[in-house]
Amino acid sequence: MKKIFLVLLSCMFLTTSAYAQTISTQPSLKYTVRMPQAAQGRFHISLEAKGFARDTLVFKLPNWMPGYYQLMNYAKGVDSLQARNQQGRALTVNRLAENTWQVLAPKKSAFTITYQVKTNRKFVANSFIDSAHAYIVPANNFLYIEDMLQLPVQVQVNYADQPGFRKIATGLDKVAGKSNVFTAPNFDILYDCPILVGDLKELPAFTVRGVPHRFVGYKMGNFDEQLFMNTLQKAIEQGVNIIDDIPFKEYTFIGIGPGRGGIEHLNNTTVSFSGNELKTPADINRIMNFLSHEYFHHYNVKRIRPVELGPFDYDKGSRTTQLWISEGLSVYFEYLMVKRAKIVEQNIFFANLANNITAHENNPGKLYQSLIQSSYNTWSDGPFGTSGVDKNKAISYYDKGPVVGMILDLAIRQASQNKKSLDDVMRFMYRAYYQKLKRGFTDAEFQSACEQMAGKSLAAEFDYVFTTQPIPYNQYLGYAGLELINTTDEKSGPRKTQYRIQTMPDINPAQKAILHSWLGE
Image (tube, rainbow, N blue to C red; front, side):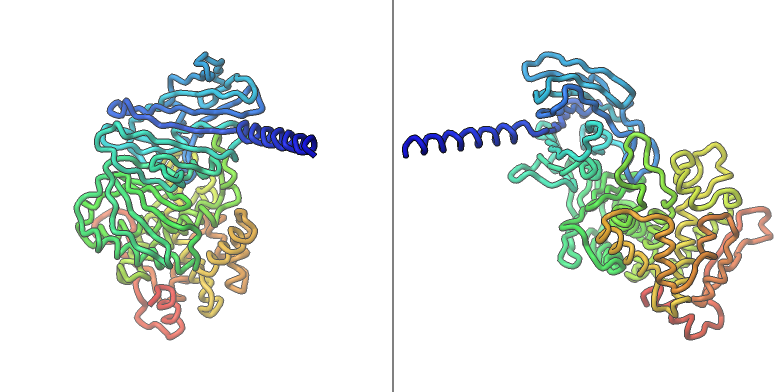
């Protein structure tokens, strides 16, 4: 009996040892960010790697970040990259391309890669550091291993030795008991969660359907913080009402300081923000539109997403023909969120759409480029159609996109006798493709969803997406008892054509019902 017990004990020990060895040799990646040269605009990065079954690993730095559809060439800021084993001996590192490094290390061994990241531009899609704060865009700072984007990763941000660096804001999950150590289940999540460090201020939080919504930022300025957050809450509630679901446990607006630009993420957004700019009702309208737009993106593009946007091609970019949906319709819904929240009156809502119509109609590119071409070519033309070889032959999906959103919405309301709308389309897309099928959608699937809600073909309306055909605005505005007026002063000489949307003199009950339902009145 004793002999049998010893055999069993031995087997248990061997099994436990083998299990422990398996656990300890699982691939592991841990980044540490240090800031000894913050004033010089440099991050010091170290990556501890171990447990890989290969003796040759290819590390890459993304060339762009999702949400900003331009190649950023982040690797240009990387220097002093080297690798060493646990004994401190240098490992062979071959630079295969500007953003690609090959590291030779024994299988299952542990080694460390160190490098620096230089920064010099304050922008929402770039990392930046100075003596007062640090903004980390993970795609700008953290290498991934080729074909291993699915690996979990840990990030530690060391900032205690930086005077004034008191707080961190990020959408990453914290390691229990650690205020500066975070985890991500894969690199797609890591690259979706920027990190802001500094003397940060948090505004009064609010909840929507029991979910906390926070606003943390750097150099927030002087303004009525409670009034601002109360107003923002009203807009956010309207965005949630459109989709009727909140897919996260907490949401954070991260203000990176004064400037321009914002980029959406799954449970957070990073935005250029300064409360010092909130001086007039027009300022409030602008910032509420901006924040509503970024918030609605966590539905529209992060979850209701074009099929090409995930998995991402971090090298070449992920081209899609549907940014007019992801960006253009988000502009349209930002207007609706702010109007339905009663932050602005009808005239401001109409003025926002009229401004888009004015911009599009004065753009000579409307004769040359369709909405889907604008979406696909944004990598060269830019989101506003001004960065390509000939800016007179490109348009902006930020202008024509919301206009087509308005047309589709009014067409669906008219065809369904005001029983369905573009709200229903977005809700359907969220449930059918994000929640049920867990994938993105195609151009045809989006058109099909719109037609399903309308109960008829919308081929004529989608011609304004696929072609450069002129838009008969008054046909669609008329469904809501509205009309487009040319307000250009001919006596002032040659100038851009100006438009205004106004209510018709005689509006019937059916038109009035569509108008009030559309605007949430």
